[in-house]
Length: 127
Image (tube, rainbow, N blue to C red; front, side, top):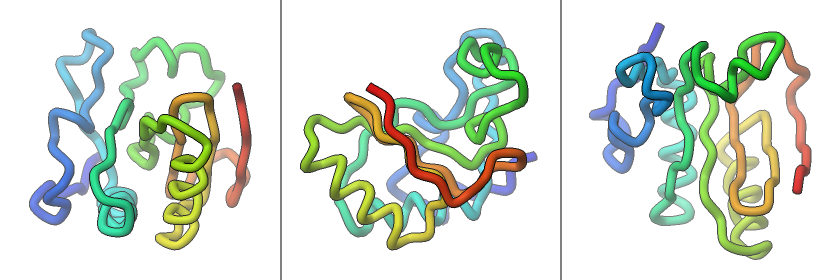
């Protein structure tokens, strides 16, 4: 269940944070604690481009998993990046605001504020 109040995070909209699977009607179950940390990253870095926020259990990426991921728990966001320098800055900001999971990918950085079944803190890289 979402406890996020979008008024507390003026740089993030429901539209960009909601599920985009096309099956659930755009559910948005983001957690306030995660969104507050994400707003903290925005305050440090400036504009951030969200590529994935909440994902419902029917989302294709969640369907690949044995148990729901942090996105389905409302505690994760993927942020578009363009180069290694921006990825480094995102990691610095994520650590500073207390993100617990950081995944580095070729064109985005995954940040999460916790996961119910995966060990945290954690850092990983996938190309």
